[in-house]
Amino acid sequence: MEVETPKKIIKFEWLTTYECNLACQGCKVIKMGDVIKPKPFDIKKYEEGLDNLYYFADANFGAFYGAEPTMLGKKNLGDLVELLTKYSKDGKTNTIITNGVILNGDHDYQQYLLDRGMDSITCSVDVIGTDDYDVSSTRKSHTGLELLDSMKQKGIRDTCGVVTMTGANLQYIPDVVQEIHDRGHWVGFDVLHYDQKNGNDMFSSGPSKLSDIMLSRLDRSQIAEVADRLIEMKSNGVRLFPPVSYFEMLKNPKYSVDLNWKCGDGDFPHCITVSPDYRLHPCDCQIGKYTNDFTVFDLPKRWDEYVEAHFKSSAECESGCFWSTHFLACEMVKDYTKDKSDYYSHKEKNGK
Image (tube, rainbow, N blue to C red):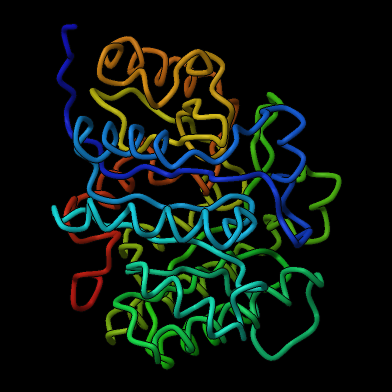
């Protein structure tokens, strides 16, 4: 069989399950199980797929989440963590993204994952010290931060708290970022995931459920203040890993509120998303209309065909969104993915 040779992708994201033990206001991912039927967990299938992503497509970094990856069960998650050590030996990196509800406080489970080779853990931390937020997001913020502290104390290499900015937590963002940093963790950053008009969105609950937390043009001045504060914090050494250009973009309503942009053309995908049934999607925002016929097992023999479908699918998004900003969309994204080896794995000393 003739194997096509791709250009290097930056990263991939693998949605391990659509099961979750929380119901965050902005997320509908648990309903995706009615649309995309997950396959039973099969570590051999994972290895075949990961070989294609890490070796054939030459990705440096992979993020594993869901919904909630601990819903795979302790043994299955442990098997996945151990499998990932195969690629770590070749300099490949990864992180497991969890809400922390099952793992937090279960020190035996935490140690079990570390003993299986867990290298990096990421949790969502959207608010700290306030209950003025939706119940699930507040809970995962508190359990996630505690879990990051616990795993760091146990010696894991990398811990990261990801902050998602919304209209409800906008005022708290600098304090949340500072707290995560002060506890010794990296800080990731996203903006509320907006619903795509074409109905193919994989995560967003949609405008009807997001109306009270969506950012609007009335928030422009405060968004700009927060962005400037984060730029200052980054210059002062806060381990905030989106680049300055990302936060400069936040000050433009085109990107932070109106989402009046579209993913553009390119010569290769920066990121590939794998769903729980092994099918491929152009990003973690949308179900790819034209990529739906591809699985992660098809990459070596159908790469050129997949790339064409990848960009054709992205072109049908009716508006931009911030959860796909790692995808090729504008100059900011090119900056965001510039450091192919160390950026997502947090091996840079200051994240600049």
